[in-house]
Every structure is written in structure tokens, then in C-alpha cells.
Image (cartoon, rainbow, N blue to C red; front, side):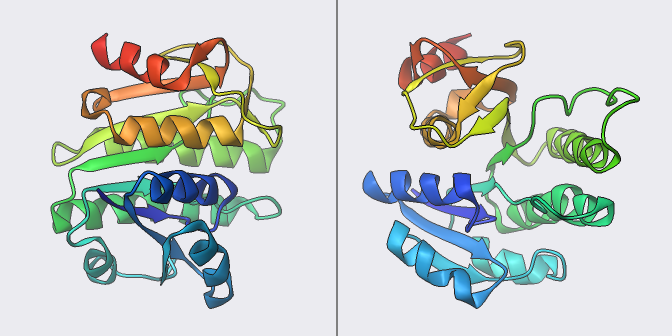
Length: 220
């Protein structure tokens, strides 16, 4: 497969790029800064410099043409304000989906967040609340598109602990933690399992091997 990943320098994306390249897939990562290219090359991915906050659909289509799947793993990141939660976590996800449709790339996996399906509690930090709203709006937009075979993945609280290879993956899991290693492993497995299209899934650490967890969801 050829897979194009938006937010290619992110912590989950770099892990995913290594996994995909390791199994023989062709991977390209969309990055904002040329200085990030070395990390992608080291992960086995082709760096594509394109700022998702200023790019046009036509620019992105050129990068997506010929791809078998698109993954949106971009995010404004820690330290960014409310405005960039909207321009990256919502608007860039929609732009990338526009380009995927225009390029004929049906498979579209978006990394969301647990809690994006509801209005944040009143005492939520305003920036984090804006992040959750942006993620929820992006999910809704992607799920409304008949031209995409989408999967929405909503991990719990992310950690940098070593992956266990065992998870809980379901439409509703309850709150919990999950390692970035395991999120990347689940994304790789979802891309290889087309029957997970049309599903919105929560993900936390658990006891079920990743491949089995994805196959169970696909059969459900």
C-alpha cells in the first residue's frame, strides 16, 4: 500500500511510519518544516513539505494521487492556543479529507480523541475544550462523506510507556490510558483491515492482542 500521513512528524505518526515501512508499505508524511525531514527519512518515510494551514486542496491532491489510504494524525500540539485548535485539528482535517476525495483515495483514518463526542464539562480548561470541540467537528465532517471509507480512532490518555501490544478497542471502552506505541500498532492494523470502515472506535490499554482486537471489530 501507499499511505500518506498528515502530521508526519508527530509522535504517533513517526511510530506508524516505522511500522508501515517495516511491513513493506510505501509511506509519505506531510510535514510543515523542512527541518523535520530527517526524522521521517530515519523512520522509512518520504517527507512531503506542505503547511496544512495554508495549503490548497489542489496542492494536497498532488501529494495524495496514487495513494491507497490517507491518515490524519496532525494536531496543533501542546502550547498552541484556541485558534490553532480550530485551524489544525478541525480545518486541516477537513481539507485533507477534501483532497483525499478529489484524489480518489477512499480509505481515510483519522486520529481523534476520547471525549470528542460530547460537550466538554463546564470546568474544562478552555484550550482543551476547544481541542475536543475541534476534534468532534472534524470527526462529524469526515463521517458525513460518502466518498470516504473512514475510520475514526479515539484513543484515551496517551503515554510514552513501551507498548504492550494488547489493547481494548470498541465503540465505547470507558476512560483509560494507552501508549503511543499501541495507538500506532492499532492504526497500522486498521489500515490493513478494510472492514473497519464506517466505525468510530475508542482505544485504551487492555488484554487483547492488537491484531485480534481489530479483527473482532471488523467482524462485528
